[in-house]
Amino acid sequence: MNLKKIGLFLGPLICALAYTAPSPLISFQAWQVIGLAAWIVIWWVTEAIPIGMTSLLPIVYLSLSGVSTLKEACAPYGSPIVFLFLGGFILAISLEKWKIHERVALKILSFTGTSANGVILGFMGATALLSMWMSNTATTLMMLPIALSVLSLLRGGEQRSDTETKGMHNFGIAMMLAVAYGANIGGTMTLIGTPPNLVLASFINRGSTGGEATLTFFDWLALGVPFGIVALTFTYLLLVYVLYPNRLGQVEGAGEVIGRAQSELGEWSAAQIRVSLVFLVTALTWVFRAQIVSYFEIKGLSDAAVGLMGAMSLFAIPSGEQNTAGEQNTAGEQNTAGDRRVSNPLLKWSDMQRLPWDIVLLFGGGLSLAQALKQVGLIQAIGDQFANLTSVSWGSLALLTLIALMLTEVMSNVALVSVFIPVVSAVAIGLDLPPLALCAPVTLAASCAFMLPMSTPPNAIVFASGHVQISHMMRAGALLNIVSVLWITTLARFFYF
Image 1: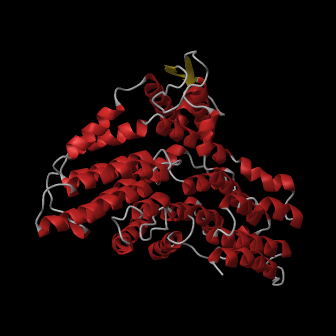
Image 2: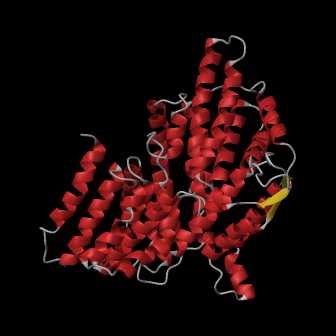
Image 3: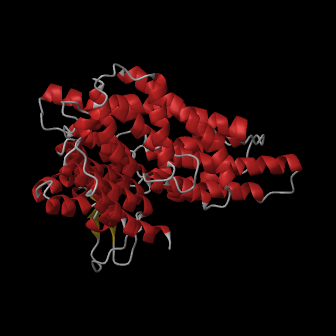
């Protein structure tokens, strides 16, 4: 029997057992929610059924069990953070559709030079920058073919010495890991860069902590950017100077590969310029939203509203590219409107097929579960257990961060954050600390899975290239995990204690 079948039966079984284990410390309804949490986590981890469908379980369970009304169970699925995610991802789809991400990546590579270490730095920097704003999976899929082209160019030359052969081998490993780790780290730097950040923001901004704490786009930048810059710097130095030094010097022909790829893209089209302007205006509004609200007194201007306005404008602004029947524009679309020349909008509804609707539902499911945990008093009960403590030591915070990081190596980081955040938030409140003091390090750690191919999609994608073995990833990942724990803990202590 495979893992999926085991999880399919184990989830509801554990939930049923929760009904038979009442305790005078918590109510029967609290045990019902504990059973639901166990059921959801087991199905998320084993993927017994699609994750998106598992995420609908709270709606059915909570309403039938009487823990919540149907309206209360459904409300979190319409959280503003869900729509912030939608807005951000639609912007990312537009960048990908019009190949702006390729232009950005190639431009960065042209700046970093054609030395072997410079090329690796360029790939890592370009991947991280793109992953700050779009899916790390899409970013990795885009960067990998370019990286493989450079590797193919190296291996197509004349016979090299044993030292050079080893150097090329290390160059390939470092290149692949730079792409994967750049995508993982880049996603931590902005609020929309990776789903766990959005789960945290939704939990905080919905008032689930019982206070008036908020988490804005700019708030997370202040934490995420310092973390990302240091993490990227250390990762680069570790890969090229410690673990996989190549000593190749200049990569002959790499400039030609990059230049040829740039020339194939041609000049900037009207559509690419318009999408770039929409993206730039939206990003700047996110960053300076507080100042805009204060100056213009626009009280309803939220991060979600900004993202949705940017996304909707892409469906209204014409691309400026006209094509007749059968012709393709620069986005690869064909005009089927007869011989009449038409100008399509920058995005059409058919482009929304690429939206990760399963992750949207997972957001809602996690938030609905968190709301139920708070509603039956479990979060308050957990917080009360720590009410007599006066502080959190550096070591205990590091241990909590390490636990979250190691768990995310083997399970969905979104699922991990959805379950962990309500618990550690309650602990923080019990210690009279801001909820972010414990929630932020857990969330950052959830995106720092560097050791295993199955930990994140970028890891799996580069592993499938055949240039990286599990031993390579574990060797680098183990050191990066340790450094990540130390740096996350240090940042959290500086910001919140």
